[in-house]
Structure formats: structure tokens, C-alpha cells
Amino acid sequence: MRRTGWTQSIVPNSGDHNVYLVLDDLGQNGRVWPEADAETTDLETIIADLLTGQYKDPVRVIGFNTVEGWSQDVSADVAQELRRRCDLQQRDIPFFLQDFVDRYEGRYRDVQLPLPMRLV
Image 1 (cartoon, helix red, strand yellow):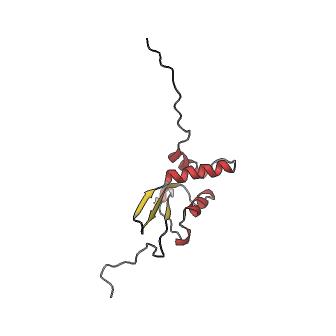
Image 2 (image 1 turned 180 degrees about the vertical axis):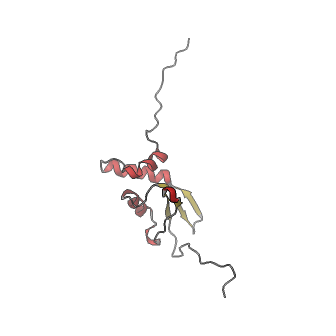
Image 3 (image 1 turned 135 degrees about the vertical axis):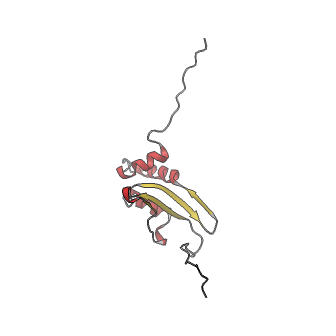
């Protein structure tokens, strides 16, 4: 018999695997975690979906593994991987991902040039 107030778990129970979800900004409609098929929440699929424009304005990517008991913001790693793949294909970051990549990687990579110090 079910307990009062019991709800079915949304956590996949089909083994130990990492899950990745994208927070998408829909403008005036707000930010959402789009529904995802449990089979399409692996990192490779998320990166492919980002590159093909499946998200309107991605804000962040969260990874978690309930069996191992961890979760973390992996947005910077994903932005770096998006840049690497576009570089390998010798193409620019797609316009719909530019803000995301800039937010986590920086529009221009910060380089500190050595300045000569003059002691008077």
C-alpha cells in the first residue's frame, strides 16, 4: 500500500550512469529544465544537441550520478569541449551558443602580458 504523499521517483534506477541536464532560457517564458529521455542524458548527446541548436539559450549544464551521490555544474567543461570541437572542424562557435561559451570560457582568453617594471 502506498504512503500518503508518496510520489514516484524521477531518478532513473537502471544502473550507475552519469546524467546531464541543460538549463535553457526561454526568454519571457522563463528558464526550464527541458524534459529528456533517460537514454539521451549522456554527455555526448547533450554536446551534440547543443551544437545542433536543440536549446534556445543554454544557461548551464548540470551533471549528477545518484548512485555515486554527486552533482556538479559542468558548464565550463562543456563550453571548453564545444570550443574544441568547433576548432577541430575549423568553424566558429554557432551564434546560438556564443553567449554560453563566452560566459564560461570568456570571450577573449585572458592573457597577462609581462609589463616592464621601472624602479626609480
